[in-house]
Length: 129
Image (cartoon, rainbow, N blue to C red; front, top):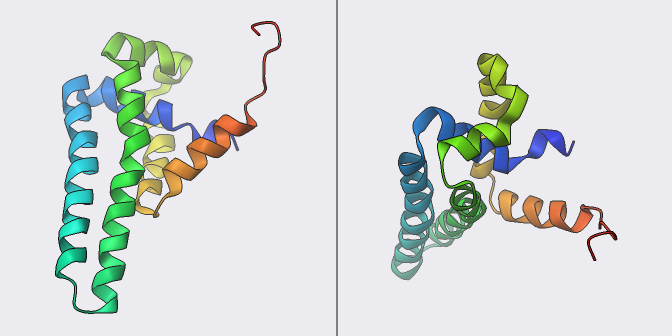
């Protein structure tokens, strides 16, 4: 399960095929625009479904925060290629794998929750302590 939910590699494959600047702009836009639109809808809401829509848009923006952070930490195409390693040899297979994973950000708060859970489950290396 852990290997199939590697959002850092999802950001890396986007960087390899689309370029760092485009991916950085995409995730920054996803964070800012979704949250701003969500806040706008919330302040203008007159019904419960509009409040629900605003909550969804705000959560959608929050989903892109980890992806934006991963993109910044990868920083360029060379690091993205190193991150993906052997997976790039079969680029079609890698794209198919990460294409399915790219739908997960549409689920509210999925990426922040899964990223936090992943960090908490990461084993501690006592040799480095």
